[in-house]
Each structure stands twice: as C-alpha cells, then as structure tokens.
Image (cartoon, rainbow, N blue to C red; front, side, top):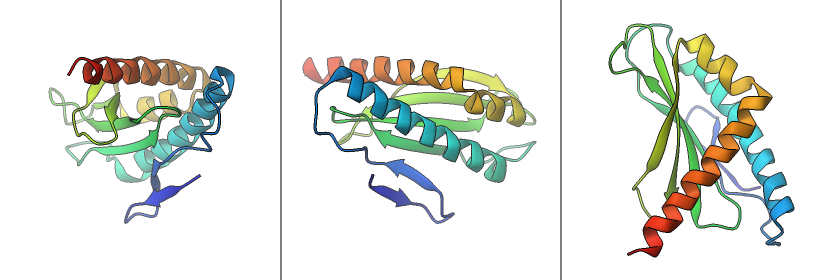
Length: 145
C-alpha cells in the first residue's frame, strides 16, 4: 500500500491496495481494509488536532477507491452554526484529476461523538456504502460530460 504523510506524521492519503482483479468481493475486502485504516487515522487526528471548543482548520483523510479513478475523503470540521462546541463529519468523493467534490454530511456533534462514530465498526460499513454511492455519482457526472 502506497501511503503519503503530512507534516504531522499521519498517513492521510492512501493510494489503494493491489488492483489486480475486478472481482467485486475482493474490491469490497479492499474497501473494508482502506476504510478501517482511514477511520484509525481520522480518529487519531481528531483526538490530537481538533479542539473541544472553537474554530479550527478542517482535517481530512483520503484513499483511492479500488478499480476506479476516484478518491474517497472523510472530513472533520467545525460546525458553521455552532463553532463553539460542535463539529461535523462528512464523506466525499472526487475524481483523482479533479478538485470537484461530491459530499454528504454524516454527523453533527461534539468532538467525542465524532470520535465514537468513527471508531464504531458498524458505522464503518455505512461509510463504505456512502463512499461507493458518492463514487458512482462522480462516475455518472464525468460520463455525462
């Protein structure tokens, strides 16, 4: 797995695993591995970089979606309506050669609620489903150009 690191020594961009098969089951296994790693890194970064109160720069972690030209990205940022104590978690997808994001909001809550959501294995399955759906939307958008 090729991984890049940011200045905080967190792996924030996963460029996929071996893409040697179009087998749907293998791709699902790859997505589970990648999403598990994304959640580990995002949870740790949220714990270390997101303050309990106030505004902060958004943090994100991304990975290449197997057998596509798309990337999935999970983002934690402050809530624009209540930045003092609420945070937002969203997931997005974009074509690897574009900065046009298609995203969906997942959760609005405290820092700890965001961390708890990310660390719940059942929620990771929901995140995989959302990433797949957003990737399909990206593919649809680019197929219509």
